[in-house]
Structures are given as C-alpha cells and as structure tokens.
Amino acid sequence: MIEARGLTKRYGDKVAVDDLSFTVRPGRVTGFLGPNGAGKTTTMRMILGLDRPAAGSVTVNRKPYAELYSAMREVGALLDAKAVHGGRSAYKHLLCLAQTNSIPRSRVDEVIGIVGLEDVAGKRSKGFSLGMSQRLGIAAALLGDPDVLMFDEPVNGLDPEGIRWIRLLMRSLAAEGRTVFVSSHLMSEMENTADHLIVIGRGKLIADCPIAEFTADGAAQAATVKTPDDLRLAGVVTAAGGALERGEADELTVRGLSAEEVGQLALTNGILLHYLAPARVSLEEAFMELTADSVEYQAKTGAQK
Amino acid sequence: MTTAAIPATPARIRAVPAATRRAGLPGTLRSELTKILSVRSTYWTLLAQVVASIGWAVINCAGIVSHGIGPGFNAAQASLTGQVALGELIIVVLGALVITSEYSTGMIRTSLAVMPRRGVLYAAKAMVFAAVTLSISLVASFVDFFVGQAILSSKHYNTTLGAPGVLRAVLLSAAIMAVFGLLAYGAGAIIRHSAGAITSILGVIFLIPALAEALPNSWFADVVRCLPGGQALMPIASSSPSVSNHLFSAWGEFAVFSGYAAVLLALGAWLFIRRDA
Image (cartoon, rainbow over the protein chains, first blue to last red):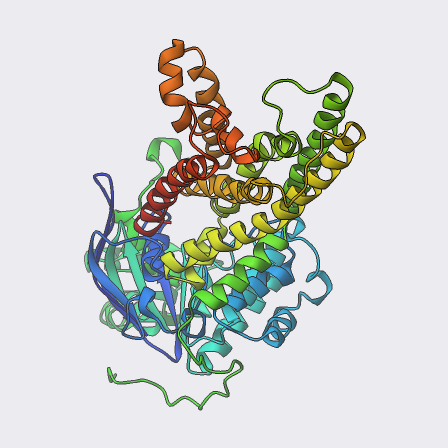
C-alpha cells in the first residue's frame, strides 16, 4: 500500500507535483497516468525517498521509505532501466543489490531465470538492448519478493512481445495480492492492464477511479448508428444539442447524446435506424479529454496540419 | 460499488527468507565490496598505482646508485617517494570514481532505493574503498621498500625495516594513499561529476602546492607545512624524525592531510544525505 498526502515538489518556482493525495491498494494494478511532464516520475522518486517533498508526505506500508526494515523485501522499483553501472555484469549487479538486504545468492539466480536473462547474466550490461535492460531492472525489482512494485514507463521502447510479457507479469503480481503501481503517458497501454487509474496533469490529481468508471462516463455520451436517412438524423441530433460524425463505412457517431436519447429522437421523428449502440469511447479519448487542459508541452495549433 | 473491495488474496509463499535484522552496514559493506571488485576501472587504477609506485622506486634508487647520495639523503624516502608523490595522483581518480560513477550511470538511484539509509551507504562505500586501497598500497609500499633497498645495497646506502622510523615510513606511505583516496571520495560526493571532481582534486593537491612555491620565501616557509601536497608529503616517506624546520613531523603532516580528508568527507556526507539523488 502506498499513501500520498498533500505531496508537493517544487523545482525553483516551478511546481512539479502539486498537493497530490492518493492511495495505491494491494491486489490490483494501479495505472499512474499523465502527459509527459505531469509529475509521474517525480512522484515515484518521492515515494522511494530519492527526492524530498517540499510539503506533504508519502508512506509505503504505512512507513516513510527510509524507515522500512528491509526496503527490498517491501518495495521493488524500476524507475530507469538504464540506471545501472554498464561496466558491471548483470549477475554482479543483482548480487550487489541483494547483499544490501541480506537476500541469498540463490534468489539472484532465481530472478535471472524469471526474466529470462540466463544467457547474458555474466555479460556487462553496457551492451544490453533496451528490452534486456528492462528485464534486468525488473529482475532487480523482484529480488526481495516485495509486496509493493513500482514501474515507471516499463514498456517504453519495447517490442510487442516484451510489452505483452510485462503486461502479464504485472497482472500476475497483482493477482498474488501485491500492490502494483505503474506509470504511463499512453492510455492505450493501461486499457488491458490496469484495474484502477490515478490520472494527473501538471502535478495535480485529475482522476482517481476504477478503470471501468473512467470509460463509462464517456460512453454515456455517445452512440453509433446506421440509418439510410442520415441528413434528417443529423438535423434532429443537432437540434437536440448533439453532433453527428461520419464513422467507418456507413456508420455514424453521435456525440453528446446517449444511445437511449438517439433512439427516442429517431422514434419521435420517424427516422429508420438499422443499427444503434452505445459507443465505447476508448480510454485514449477519455484521457485526452480529461487532460486536454493540463498538457505540459502542447503542440501549437499553427504547427499542426 | 463498495469501497472496501480489497480482494481476497491467496497467502503467498515467500521466495525470500524474512529479514532477521534491519538492513544496514554489514550487508551494505558486502554489497560495496562486490561493486568495487566487479568493475574494470578499479583494477586498472590500482594496477597503474602499483606500477607507478614500484617503477619510481626502481628508477629513483638506480639513479642514486649511479649519481651518489647528496645531502639530506634518506634511504626509506628514496624507496617511497614514488608511492606518495605519484601514487596519490592516481588513487584520487579511483576515490572520486567510486562515487561519481554512481551518478554518471544513474546507479545511485538504484543503490538508494535498496538502501535508503543514506549515511549507511555513504559510510560503507568509503570504508570498502579505503580498505581496498590500503591493502593494495601496503603491498606496494613494502615492495617499493625492499626493491629500492636491494638496489641501494649495491653501494651500501640501504637501510632495514628495523632501523628507527623506517617501518613508520613504510606504513604511513601506504596509509596516506587511503587518506588521499578518501579526500577525493568526499570531493566526488560534493561535485557528483567524474571529470569535475578529478580535475578539482588534482588542482588542490597538485596545483596549489606548486603555485605556492611562487610565494615569497618567508611566506612559503610559513604555509608549506599546511599545504595539501608537495613538500608536506616528504616527512611521510622519510624515516628521519625531522626533514625540515618548515615541516611538521611525519605524524604531524599525516594529521594535516587527514584533516583535509575529514573536512571533505564530512561535507560530502552532509550533502549526500540532504540532496535529492
């Protein structure tokens, strides 16, 4: 369990994390979402005690990080896969970490097996591909068999196979009852992985809810229809405060109205519908909508096509 | 939707034995020993130090044999000057790298995540580095001495370990390496950048004593004993109880260098514990 209360971090006069409060609970994957520069990494660094908050506090298993009895047995973190001394072999890297917390050597071999680095364990990590480095970082996080796991953008730069592997790993870690906290700036990555979402923008909390709730909010407000009488439907929908967009093939998307409302409108106006369904707003769209005002480095409209 | 929806989780079989005591210095010392012995820069630097130290002893003593001895000749010093004057310049590189490489590679974040007690990490790193340096320097120091004396013995200029002050000179010439290393380690913790730390520390121990020689003679005579290098090193390598009126004894100069190291180590520790990693 990770609990942040009023967590704040400033760099000079820039506020990176602004009065952030949230709780990450065990037994599920909690996605930590936000555009680039939203303060996700800074928040994770404060959880690990690497950065000192300007205000507020954060605890892991109800203790400040530095007071944990055996940090590796309680928390495993992957912040930056390249944050290793490249001149050291993968095995020695893991061994020196394990030794700090008196974790037996046999566990080092075990985690090397779990992440599948047996063939390169004796090689210096300098020559590792990003995917291999990512696996090494995950092996380090798993060393202490911790209850809490944190991954900062774990699938960045991975191939589809690697992405799938990490996704399954996170799901199985959560299924074992662990707290899994994973950050991403891409909503689509979270769609099949996270159970719960904490969304931040410009250091502030935007949403903290189960993933199903996140999409349901959007779904109520859109519908997909097929009709031979699209012109009349467009008029009716617009009059009711919605908007009609042309979708794939002969599909139309109604925004701003629910499927029920569209059905009612069609009936009262005698418009034939061939198909009507609530539109599943993708998480991506819901996320974009939610964070539109809080994107740190927004592209200027003039530069867009 | 209930808020108390913490799922029933199966009791997990722990893959790692529970901690018997709080993670601290003993484990971190083992970890730091693994770290320092698992990168090539350690071996290269220590090899360079040993080669420079012994090489100098050979060349210097052979030179004395062929040119004859002058005033102020000290047989122990002839053997050990290379270690203290040249070895220090090499050992400071390793001392700085031990900590700055953690920052340049980003490893520091991993190190602190597994050992969040920063004072423990800082101390373990310093202790392991000092112990490794001291062991190698002790070997080099004794080899320097015996090789040098063997060369000097052809003209009977040599001395023995049993002669007054000789063992002290051999041991202090090794210990001063650890002191210089720790000085650089402290500077590394303050500057956190390899090239920056090495350049600064070489400036302090090499350039400042050299520049001080440009001072008027009377001023120089007053400050030379307190400078962080140069002539102040000579009593350490010498078996003579008093090398010069302007310098402290061997132990006195050793205390001066240790003082510099202590100040930098303490400042480095303070910053290491306080700053964001």
